[in-house]
Length: 307
Image (cartoon, rainbow, N blue to C red):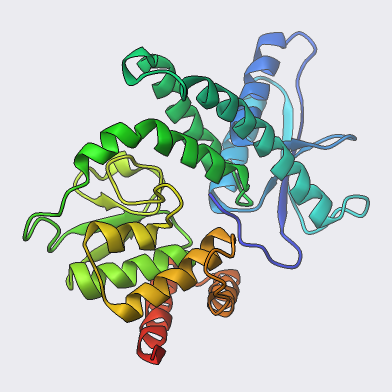
């Protein structure tokens, strides 16, 4: 779940106390706070970025604490006078970096192993843990992509076997699913799907593709869908998978690649302005559907502007 970056991020803070004899309840509360991805303040209190989901979690936890004969309050905080927003954001980023690094170390140990020798149970646990971390990765930690790439490498033999030209009609009149708050790669991929693959494609948003088994995942962690492969962004993956050879689309693919991955591979900077516009709309609390539609219109304009 990504929290939009605006000037001052509203925060939620939980302050609570439990009776000294409530050791087991204290451990239970602490474990829940860890699952929620809180940052503990040096003085007192536990902080999360403000969002409806985080607000609901803390309110439920506060209610639970009160049933344990403790005291709890959920406080809305605009700023902390001794903790600038950027510093607080970095604490969340560092916490998620530590979480991702654990997975990276485990995945690197698996890479040299043959497919048959890789422990499936451990790999499945890593996948589940990765999903858990992404739900509390509020500020788009750069280490997330490192984990995605390592998992993609481990899946390469399986994915390679599935890389075939799609059958006629296989992807027509389908529902496609991606993560909420679409950015440059996702809006451009949706545009590509609607224009070249399925003119009647419908798009939904969610964090768990397994909850929508009939939907086709794109630009999200789902081995059976379409996402980053090797050095390609999702837009490039779709172009290759569906053999889209339009010269203007090829140039757009270079623009999206450089903007999304930031590696300067093609030396194209045109997408930075588009990405800034999308970010600006996201800060205005534009809905996911509206953000996607506006973004697709931007890419349509970019397509027609190509020589």
